[in-house]
Image (cartoon, rainbow over all chains, first blue to last red; front, side, top):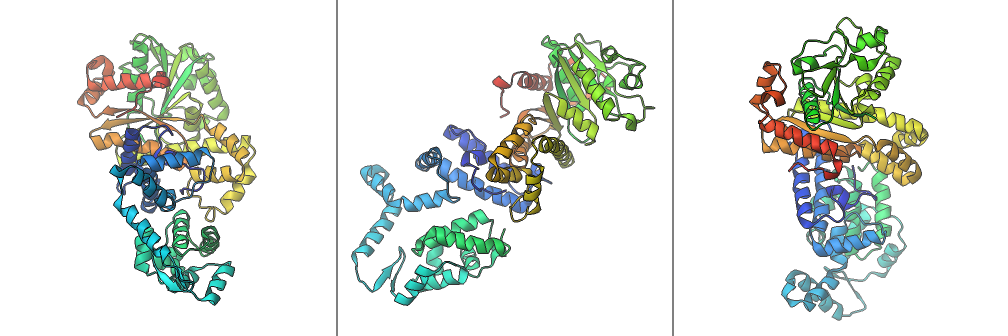
Length: 236
Length: 303
C-alpha cells in the first residue's frame, strides 16, 4: 500500500472532500485506532510494518487536512489537477514560508515567530554578498568552480555524491535533520545507499526532494535519479 | 421482484442463523413478508431458531426432482409473514450440488413470491456458499469480536472478492494486463488488490474503469455480533477501513448487537429473541440494522 498518485488525503482518511473539521478529526482518530499495532481487526490482513506505513500516511493526510490554510492549498492543487507531491505537507510549508510570513505580518495577531525568524535569517544572509561565497539556507561555503561544474553536469546522484555535496556546502547532518525533519538515521541511510533501512519509496522520494532543496539542487533531477537507484537496488 | 439478503461470515457459531431469523422477523413486523432460506449444507437448523420442527420438504427434494416448484418448499414458522425453506437432508450428498443445481436454486430463490428473501449461509468459503452470497442484493458479513471470527470473516471476504474478481477479469478481458502487472508485483509494489487496481488505473484507466464497474456491486454490510465493549464496537469501523484499504471495496458498518443474556436464553427456549424478549436492547439494535438495510439513503452510522 502506498500513497502513489491517485490517492488523495481524503481517500486516505476515508472522508468526503467536503467533510467538516470534526469529521476529519473523528476519521483520523478512527484510522489511528484501526492501524495501531495490536488491533485484532488487522490480523491476517496487514503486517505490523504495513500498518506502520499506513499510519505515517494517515498522519501526513491529517497534518494537511486539519490545517485550514494547508487544506485550502491542497484543495486548490487538487482542483487544478496538479500532481500532488508525496510529502505535500512539508514541501508546501517550506516553499510558502515567505508567503505565510507575509500573510502573518498583515495579520499581526497571528504572527508566527518561528517562520519569521527563518526568513529574517535568510534575508540577512542574502545581504552579505561575496562572489566567492556560496550560501544555503543553513550555511555559507567557499565556491569551488570545478566541483560546481561537476554538480551542474551530473546526471546521477547517489548517496555518496549527495554526501560530498552536503560536506562541500558545510551543512552538518544535524542541521540537515533539523531543517528537513528527516531522522538522522535515515539521512545516513540515504547517503550510504543503505536502501534496506529506508522506508517505502514514496517517503524516500520526499526525503530526497527535501535534501536537494536544502542543497540548492534540481529537486526533480536528483529525486528521479536517486529513485532509479533505489528501486534497482532493492528498495521497497 | 424479490430482494435477496445473504448473511455470511466464514466461521460457524457467530450467529448467522440468529441474525437471519431476527432480521426476518423485523422485516415481517414492518409489513414486509419474507422467506428465510437455510443454505447451511449439512448443518441446517434454522427451524430450531423459530422453534418449529424440521420441515419434511427440503431443497434436497427439489434437486432430486421430487418437488418441482421451489416455492412450495416454504413452510410457516408461526410468525405472521415469515416462512422458511430448509436446506438439506442429512442423507443428501453435499457433493451432489453441482453448478446446475446451484443455479436452479438461485433461480428458485429469485422467483419466490415474498418481496424479501434472506439467505442463511453456512460456514466456510466453499464455491457454493460464495455464489449464493454474490448473487444477493445485500451482502451481509457477520462476525464476532474474537480474533478467530475476524480472521474467518476476512478469509470469507477474500474468497468472495477473488471469485468476483476472476469473473470481472474474465468479462472485461484484461487478464493479460493483470498478469503482466502481477509478474512484477514486487517492483510494482503490489501487496493488496487495492494496490493492483491503483496500478492498473495508472497503466490503463479504461481497463481499470471496466474492472471497477464489475467490482462495484461487491458492497459489504458488516454486522458485529456479541460485542461487549467500546473497543469491540470500534472493530466494525476498522473492518470497513481494511476492506477499503486492502481490497478497495466499500463496506458499510450497519450495526452491532450486544452480547446479551436475552439472546442465549431465547436460543435455549428455541424461541426467536424478538418474540421472547421484545424489549431487550438487542431487539432495538436489530430494528436499526433492518432500517439501515432497507434505506441506504437514510443510513445511520454507528457511533
